[in-house]
Length: 451
Image (tube, rainbow, N blue to C red; front, side, top):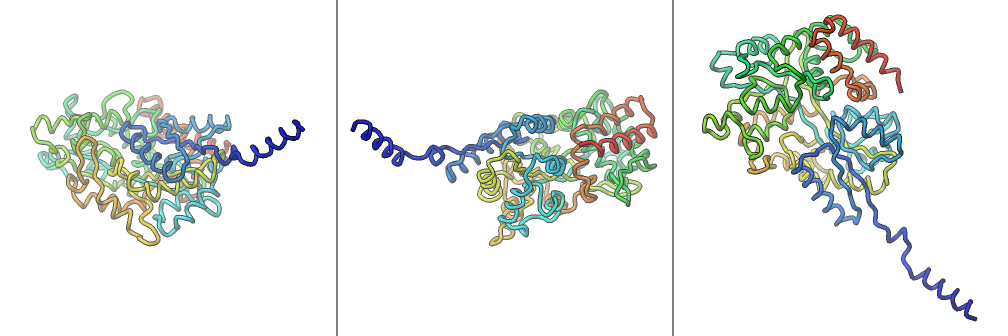
């Protein structure tokens, strides 16, 4: 009798107790390269809002962009990928082909949000088989910044052409007071690949020829290397990357640099943690911002280019798919303007609106403020012309390889940094231009054949 009673009590407790699966808390991990303190705080605020709405917890984990590829590769090998990865287009197709990303989940999210609500360019860059490798979330177009006041004093033309750039660099070069043009030279930095690729594109250089085969061994590439070396003569010695060029421009020690729009924040003088020396020296807040010109399209001897970057949300093969898809949907809906607002100057909306309100996010972005200590609209500092040129470029950014179906190869190029490595050897005099170009061509072809 006692045994029967215990059995009945066991059955009652089993049916009345909640299932461990039903009561279990769902948690996903989100890797982000937006690692600045203020941006991390905003991302965690978005995650908390998502948790309040869905009950799903999001662990936001910062990963340095320069280390992202190797961190993802290691996590893939260990079967410990995060659920969602914020990453640049440089890796999207390669990760999809390698089985790191889950294109089916991404395609389902795009379809649910509405293909027509996205810019065609960002979607096309991530096209994979019959869908999309990842979901586009934001983008920016690279800028050439120049000291408009110094150009005016010397009667120099706008540096939008190779000859004008070199002429100005030489005329304004007075080291160590000011460097004529600071280009990227650090072989270990993705920034170097970005700047060099921008210059190469402006001379009509693409990753492949008309038959679709890798073809970098061309007279135009030799010409580009020589031009880049000419610019490097007006650059400080050593391995120069984004931190150096930004610091030198904001301190008034660089006449021209190539940078993303993210610098507009610091350039405005709205951050107390980033002093703008020309503003202080002149006693005029906003002096450097008002005296900076912007070139969005560079013209070379054989072409023109506006290098652009589009960032994506990749749902991984190890993801808790349902929760991950809801997180991505939330980031591009309720959380989208807050996401863009954490750095509005460098986060252009690639989802323009919703089915009911096609211009919702573009119009919302136009009203966003930037800055940390003090906030202001971008147009207040830089005018509407810059804003319009930035927005107009989103669908037509120039990049190597993606239009030709070489996205996976581009991922390997950015992951291995072989172009910056050979470029640095050329700049240091170890290789002449023709040998450097042959080596780039050989190494990229070899890389294409690896898995």
